[in-house]
Every structure is written in C-alpha cells, then in structure tokens.
Length: 638
Image 1: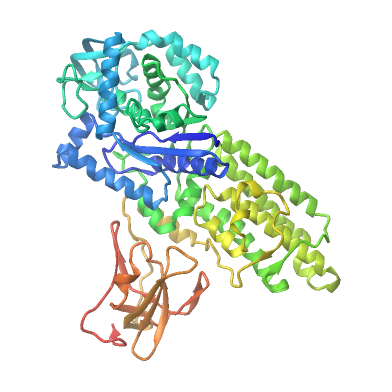
Image 2: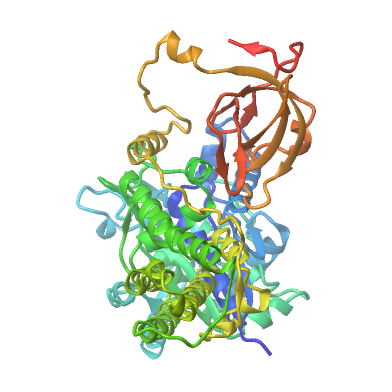
C-alpha cells in the first residue's frame, strides 16, 4: 500500500485580492504534492478560504455588500487564480460551509464539557487586521500591534477562554520529543521561547459582531476566527462525521504537512497543537513556516501600494516562468526579494540561456548529424564518466532537498546538471567530431549522453515546470514509462527519435522593456504602459492593415498559449499565430472579420510560420480581438 502525504496551505483570508506571497505558498504546496505523487505517494492537497470575523464584516460593508456576497466573490476569484496556475488541489474548503461549521460547534461544546473552555471577561488590545488580542506588554514600542504595526483598540467584553496555559509543559515536551516538528530550526526556537515566557489562556469567542460560527449553547457568542479557521485541517477530511475515511487515511497516515507564512507561526505551532491535545486528537502534522516575498524597500504592503498581484505577471510571462521564479528565489529559512530585474534575469539566463538552449542545441545536433535518431554506441569520451556521475549525484541531492522542503536548493541542483551538460558540449565539441567519419560512433554516444541528461532534467522538473517538462519529453520523443522517477537510471532509454523542428521553450526577453512593464504592474497598472518612442505618419504608413475573415482557427499543436488562425484577406489566405489562446476560444473567432497587420516579416512560433498579426486590446480583466462589421476581406484599415 502506498504511503500517504497530506499537505495544506493556510486557508486564505478574503479581505482583498491574493498577492504573490499567497501564490508562493500555494505553488510551493503544489510542487511538493506533485513531487510526492511522482515518488509513489497517495497524496491529498487542501487549500481554501477563512471567511469569518469582524474584518470580513467591515470590508464587505465598505464595498456595499453582505459578508456572504463578499466572500462568495473572492472565493470564486481565488479558485480561478489557482486554476490559471494549474494548482492540483484535491479540496477547497470554505469555513462558511456546513461540513466545517458542524465540526467547529461540536468541538467547542466538547471542550466546554471537559472544562477546557470557560466563560469570563476579556480586557485587551484588539488588532482587527490580524484578528488578534494583545496584552499591554505584547504591544510594540509605539503601543501598536507587534505583528503588523497598526493601532489596536482597547476592548472589554464577555468571552469564553481556552485553557492554553494548561498545555504549556505538554507543548514543550512534544516539541523536544519531535525536533523536526517545526522547520526551519529558527522558527522552532522562536516558538519555544514564546512558550517558555509563559502562556495566557486564550480568548476564543466574540460578542461584538455576528459574522461567524455561533456557540450552540450560548448563541450570542461566535467562535473566535482562529479557533474556527484552524479546525479546517480536519473538518475537510470528514473528522467527526460518518464520512471520516479521509481523516483516518490522511490525518492518521504517514506524512501530514502544514505550510504557512512565518507571520502565522504562533497560531499553528502553539494554539493548534494545544487544541488537538485538548480534543484527544493526535498531533500528526509537521509545520513548515517559510519567509516572505519582500519588495526592494521592505515587506509588501497594500496600504503603501507595494504589492504584486500574480494575475498580470502570469498573463504577460506565463505559467512556468512565474512558478520557477517563485520557488527559486526564496532561500530556505529566509525571505526572497521580488524585483523586476531579478525576475527577467531568471527567465533569460536560467530558463532561456541555460535550460532552453541546452535542449535546442541537443535536438538540432541529433537532427543535423543523425537524421533525428541516436542510440548508445559505447564509444566513450574522457568526459562521459563525470557527466554520468553528476546525473546520479544531482538526483540524490534533489531528493535530499525536496524531502527537506528546500525547493530552491533542489532547483539549484537541477541547474547544476544543466550547467554540467552545457560544459559537456564544450568539452566534447560535437561539431569537430562530426568532421571525422571515424568518430561518428563517438559523436552519436555524446548526443545520447546529452539526451539522457535532458530526460533526467525533465523528470526532476515535472513538479515545477508544468508546460516545459511535457514539451521536453515530446521533443525528445521520451515514452511515458521513461518519464517517471523510477526510470532515472542512466541508459534506461535504448534510443531517442526527436522532433524534426525543435521549438524554443523560453524565448529571450527584452530586458529594458520588460523591466519597465513589471514596474508598471507593481505600480498597479496591469496593462502595457511603457512609453515608446514617438513615430511619424511616414512610419505608420509603412504598416499595411487589412480586414480579414477568419476561415479557420485551431489550437497550436505545441503551445497552450497560441492559436493558429487562417485569415482570408481578399486576394489570399494568410496564417497568423496569435498568443490569445488563454482568453479567446477558437469557436468564437471563426467567421469573424478582424483587423490584420499583413506586411509583418514572417517568423516561426513554436514550429508554425506566422505571416502577420491580429489587432487586439486588453486590460487587467479581459482581452478582445478587434472586429469589424460592414467592411469586406481585403479592405484597407488606415
């Protein structure tokens, strides 16, 4: 029976759009799930929305919506974003769902009966953005919230309390007995220090607002948002219901991992295990608290206008580019910095120059020297052994780092093999071997070694690059059974037959233009606002714009983002490859009269020749191809 792996993100708080930091957590969990599945685990990935609390009630009112309308809309937006990022979650829980509410209410009443929850009066400083109370001693030097720095409000109200202090020693004993319970080590040390300073009983209900789960035995109280939210990790698995098969299978299974940002470490490392102990539920999870994505001048802040939303970046650069940067740039245990320069550099150097160029050069040489097919010949060079040993050591290093949740380092291991493979080309000089007929077997063996190296790279990249890895396998002609982790033994492939026309996966970007575009995105202008050099009427007259009738439109065979459009422009039919597949359906475009730039220099895009360009407009929400009604195919647009 396969081992189980249950991984969770925190459930996100829908006070506004999710930013790149939330996206990092979600992509990180997705990559871990895909890695574990690739290793043969039975996986379950949970994410969702934390939808209760005073802040939700307040933000909804500011928007002129009910709380229910507000959270429904943001839940829909969040699901759509995760779909665009191809997040392979298995369940999306919302704390407003009945399956969750019933578990929270039942747990609350159980703790009341046991005496672990009691009624009292709370006096403290409340921070609404953090949904947290603090004692005077816990406030920062300015007398504000120690977590977010905002002003708090002094409140006094009747409240139920959870006997957190009762579990102080038990928590410390558990952490000592399970040294890998919290990672990285620095976070564990923070938690131990926090507990050793002494725990206070925790206020776990509110009476000053209604948007929450009611306490069954005293409905004027709603359950404190954090006690409500943390329960999602078991309520989503059917805990306490007849449908608790997933609870037994995954919570009581082999590996349970909560992944959170370091700002919510205390809630998950102290409150949550104490609550489980009080309910006599096994503490089976491990907790990984990662760093933040920072801006150049500090932490992302909506109030300062320094926030990056993933939609615009995803739309402009693509799925793999975003996933790779997010996972590569945050070091284990530290923070990452998002700068336009670093983002474009990762695409141009890591993806285009190093990885993309290695694949393209290898495919080109296999086609040029051997008609597209190579096999091992045994005619070795003095550099082969080092390449093969690098392949093996990279695989081992990759596994070690992935299992330790060090994804940035795992990617660095893959790039160590990419770098070694590029060096192998320089060392063996295939173009020189090709000049000597007696060295034909050596040349073929060199190219086979490169193909095997690329196959390994493709397999190891499967959890991260969801488009490039399948493209690599398709272009190399790697059969399904050799795309698995288990197949990673050098020489497992008996031969390779590659595509005749290699398709570059990551075209190089214009650094200056893209840095300006990213700065505009960061500033909140999610469209092209790059100032361009002024043109004269003579420059414009060089463009030939004509009306065209779309006679056929199909998805590009080698690229998810492209459509292949055949357009009748009056005197002939021309082919246009357009990067609009994510926004425009082929069915809706067929039969439309569009505006086409017809005298554009022809170019190949992923193996298909494009002779022109369609005119379209876009903003942060949509893209529309420009269409006309009464003009005829071939009519000039000027």
